[in-house]
Image 1 (tube, rainbow, N blue to C red):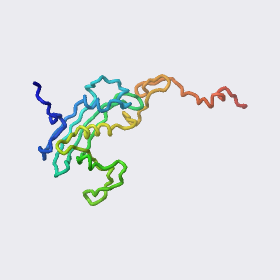
Image 2 (cartoon, rainbow, N blue to C red):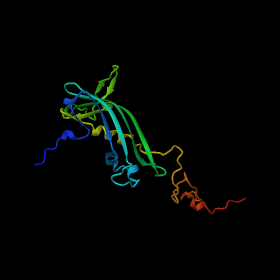
Image 3 (cartoon, rainbow, N blue to C red):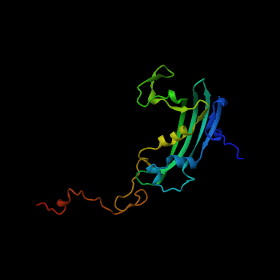
Image 4 (cartoon, one colour):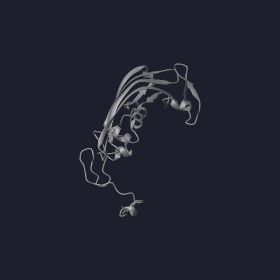
Length: 201
């Protein structure tokens, strides 16, 4: 008879009974590739699945609890590989974030449309939408959604390998960062009738 699988054996699940604790979590390329699948600047790389070079991350967290909530604070460092939005060459994006997260029962999670505010450390009001909160079931905290968010939210809409990236030639497709071509800029079709017009001298 097979032993019953313990859900707590998941690498990013922490039992509330074990708190307070300090934990180090490592995220490998298989998960990073899975989390970023379907994003254009990731898929255009045509990387294998699983991709050993997709990226990785390390979180160092202190976790503690009060009677109804769990808190996590620490650092997250990682990197992942996507395509430059101009030249489509592989590039790395690095992540260096300080984390301060609250896990609360699903019934207490703020509504996305709520305008309620919560008082911050210095007495200022913090909009509910700005709180970094995740739900938990009261017994176990699953940190995987938190780690996934670090990668997904770090991907720019149009990543650039460098600010002055010249991109690809729209006519022949050559990478203008490493080679040149003799292609001419196409004429605006609205001006094409004027191309052969000779002005009187």
